[in-house]
Image (cartoon, rainbow, N blue to C red; front, side, top):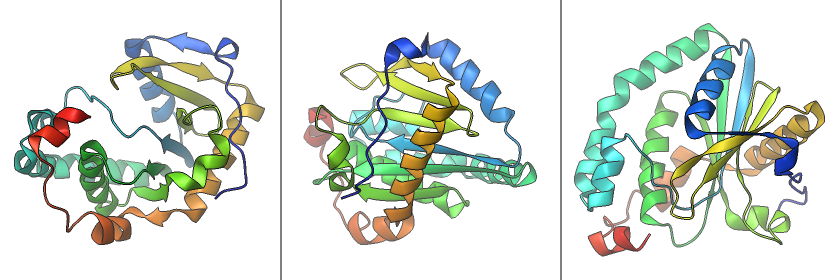
Length: 212
């Protein structure tokens, strides 16, 4: 278990953004990063992502179609990797997993393994690694962009995106970045984790997907 504790986020110390405003602000701030890095912590075990045909297929219980559709974005992933390399940008993800894996996380790990094939930096940590920071509840979903901005991404209870809280205090941003970096350092590369823990699993049933 990681001894380092996650910093506390106080919503009143940040700026509340709607979903639309968050997406626009995130895009502008990320595009401005040059020769830098960003860090994302993914903790929830279920999301209702919007605008993804593959995710829609999973929601219908069509696992084979959900996985097949992931292949449609390979050109986009390749182009993104080339652009990131051009501007010296690295985006890191830490995915916390619980056992047994939910259908959503299994699907997401298929997606993230594919992303890793195009050079994205993604590692997996078991939930036990963050237990010391979860006495009062699960860790938030957090993204730190370029060492300057922290977004606490918000979701409804059902897992639907609901905007974000933006923090710009440099000390808070730095402490969160260091926490995610520490998790990344003890995490396992998503490709090796996937090949050992996920690749052999039978597709989840429609009832499994419906219980999420």
